[in-house]
Image 1 (cartoon, rainbow, N blue to C red):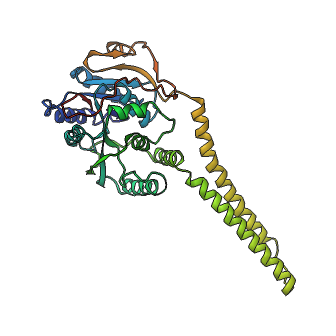
Image 2 (image 1 turned 30 degrees about the vertical axis):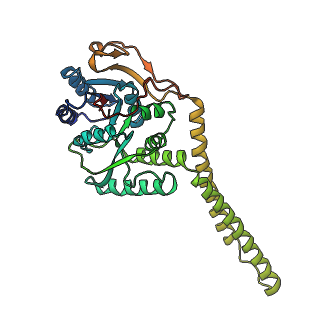
Image 3 (image 1 turned 120 degrees about the vertical axis):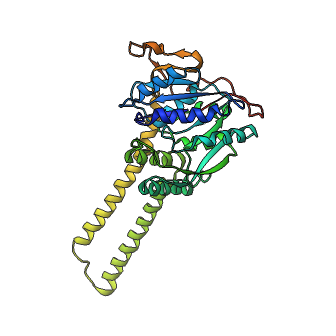
Amino acid sequence: MVPVYREGQGLLQNVRRLTAVLDRHKANFRYEVVLVNDGSPDDSLQCIEKLQRDRPEVIGVVSFVRNFGQIPAILAGMARAKGDCIVVISADLQDPPEMIPLMFDKWCAGNRTVLAVREGRKDKWTARVASRVFYSAMQRYALSSLPRGGFDFFLIDRTVADRVLANVEPNCFLQGQILYASGPVVQIPYTRQDRSSGAPGWTLDRRVKYFIDGFVGHTFAPIRMMSMIGILSLGAGIVLAGGLVAQGIFLGTRVAGWMSILIAVLILQGVQMVMIGVLGEYVWRALDQARNRVPYIVDYEALANGAKAGGAFEYAREPRVVEMAAPLNGQASGLKRASAPNTTPAAFAG
């Protein structure tokens, strides 16, 4: 399963590299590649259509009406994948597809979740620092089971996919959802490569939002910290007030002018505004959950092996049937089968 956003520059060669790796292991498994176009403004959709025309038996297409984000794209691909296990990999192939057969072997051995964990990165230093800070904070304060280097490249069993899709949350932190639904996991370390072409679509504001989503969705530490700051501020105020009263009674010293009061008021008001903002993050996400909006809207899709829905692929430029994802009430998954891992070759979605 490959989410695609602004990857037109290198998508053709990257997907061909992916299928070439999988073709070398056709004796062990059958596969399909589900490419989800997340409203890309470039020629990514045209590249996807060309790939699907070249190999319609293994490549499926899902296209959104607009950009909904990487996580909804992954969820849409997971819901449409037909294999007994699902691999999620980035379209830029910073994660090596050569690891997929090894991950498949781990799944055949009975492991329902296999994570490719980054032990090093060859991309820009800003990305390395941001990733280290983000995942270290998440591991310490929110998800202790989260690998220190994080993971975006993983294999999950159909059972785990069903669990994730049955409880889709708006603004969800996908790594946390995977870990929550998995139980024990197997980790395979690797070094993440730099992008071979194009610019990343994972911008700073998206990273910050995802960080906040992860914190708010998996820990109450910010609220606990607010309570502690309030208690400490109250204690400091009582001590300071007592000291000033004692100073006036026993030493006859007059309290200095209004500047000290102004500074105290500004500091406390700033702290209160920050606290209100933190509470607002929780309240907003509760509102978003209560509204029960669909996480994505599919413009059309053309699945592998001739299975089509939401409008025929040949008429991609004509009016199409529009499909909306099910509301976030436990009905988001179109998956029906929940087979346990086995040691026999099985079809899976890449």
